[in-house]
Length: 277
Image (cartoon, rainbow, N blue to C red; front, top):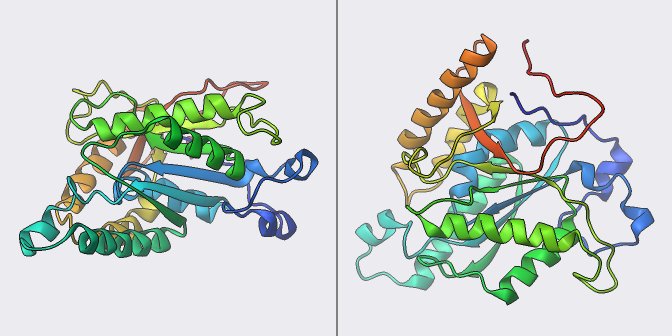
């Protein structure tokens, strides 16, 4: 199926949508979450490579997209920096990664914040999970994009996906953040695990997003990550591969696509219909 987002908000509603806003009263939240998207990324580049085209689509449709980058990927995903700077420092690499990722997010039209947790391994304990719960309750997203929960080739990814599920589960319960109303379970879409190991990681997408119109701009965003010069080739290949699969189902001329696995079942008065034109 092709994932279709909702329509553009009016100016009054759009002006109220701030992913950094503190929780407000329940009656003030009605209709607010429908246009908020939260992307939780284990490392500095993950959100861009795996869902950059979808983020662009959503922004163009009027959604407010906010990225949480849990780590900068200094220890395990900054090979370009360490190759060029064998005497470099963790702090210098971290600052460079933040600049790269900020520019990429800007290119996609998203806002971003960095939590500065450590990577390889990324350990998400109770305190960190509580922070994710708080951010879910503050942002109140309708959609969350994050990592697939099975990724033995990169446990940082799986740890992130599982923590997000736990945060959403907790945020849907009264008492998760005393004095704050619970938030309904948002639509969670898991993006690609470590590539090119998707099958090894038991990832089988059931949603395909046509990003053909935004592939070039996505590649401009990926190009910001000088510490990982290999990313462009990897994700051109996968965008073509997912598009090939999407064409089988739709017979549409889809050149580039991103694949997702839906977590929360669809609930509605009818059945979602694949886009044909």
